[in-house]
Length: 283
Image (cartoon, rainbow, N blue to C red; front, side, top):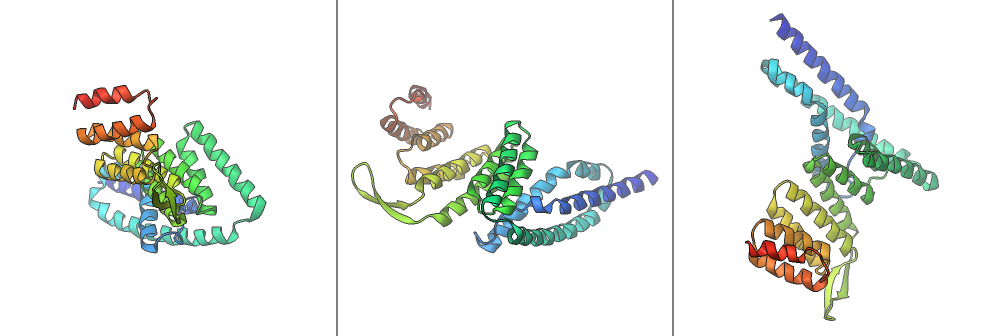
């Protein structure tokens, strides 16, 4: 009995310390700019990212709860939820302050570059947690920095935090679409087609998102993103290659044959064409 009481007290203290540290680190945890997407969507994405980050920091505490504190889990959970609401309030406060007080001009750019360089060095050294913190620090100062969001998503891929990567790449896509402007261009046959000004960047974002969905074994959404990329850049070998790989994996022979023919036409020197043909023959 005494041991259980001590265990419960220890858990409560541990959670309190974790929440206190989490609140102190809030300036480095701001993920999304609510001015760039509808408020409700941004709040949901931001909350998922913060919750997943908190989960990674509290795995040991969760294990202890399962072992010896199940009867008090509900009450501790209520305290945790109340504290998280406080975290979100503080996060919003710091976000407004960071944007308002951010330095401008050359000094600001120099500061951001220095932090990004630190993050990239951590990433090269496979210190992904440290890289994640640095990229989030940059985003807190420059909430519309698409390149840094993309780098952060790549870090999540390396960490195998695929849901985090999905949310971040999705936000990259939202930012890119916000910058898109409708334009007309001619295809290879001289026909005028309607597209967007940043078609290459949007197509690349769909490919990145499709790769994440593959990791999550969600072939439906993966294929949909690959198709959207091909709609924007139909002759891009990378786009064809990604979709061809997936079509072979899901054993869609007709689609595989069509994509292989298209890839052969735009990239006849591709060393994998023969390998793809052999795989298709086995379907």
